[in-house]
Image (tube, rainbow, N blue to C red):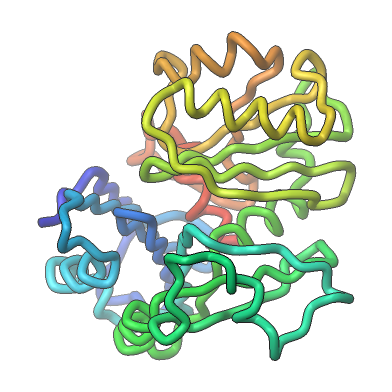
Length: 288
């Protein structure tokens, strides 16, 4: 059963005028988010649905439930974009990427059954890298059935590419040319490391306690020889300043910033009090 965690609709939204709007859907690890924006990038609708995990849970069933409960998703839109979170992915330098070998990048991962997955790839904008990832065949077919004209992208692609295009978002008062970003979503942290105008690294880590978060964060700082006193950390997603996770991070990383809302995206009066950084991943997908 889905729980609606957020439901914001601007007064200017016209449900009969959706053919003029753009729809972006984010399929998280155990959630579904979507927003509707007009041609001026004004967010008119933002909704999120969360699902209780049990042995029968799957994100394709979550999508089915959301489609059954939400009438807007069935409407005609000017454009449709589906952003997916996946546990597994890898970034390959463009010059070494071989489209015929996508499956081989995951041959040593036991929980990926080749017959049950489709292996996709996409160029990451503003980089010389290709993201390769498996998506369950059932989910892939469900997306194409529900949104036949939609463009599908991985959230790592949209976050990395958009953040690089908007590097000024990552500049704090004590910033260097090295920056670490973390997005929190559904019990996972998505880590990105940028150096200058280069996208260097990304990975997903599942966590259950604040200690897990700081362990994985400091692991990246150690791996790339980053100084926690000078290299800033930009965070987004489901985290608040009064949370134990934030307090743990701030204990070890001197310069911690919440990612600001992208300038190109407009939020109206109904979003007053809604922290924009909670939804950075879907906003990146909207503007990518």
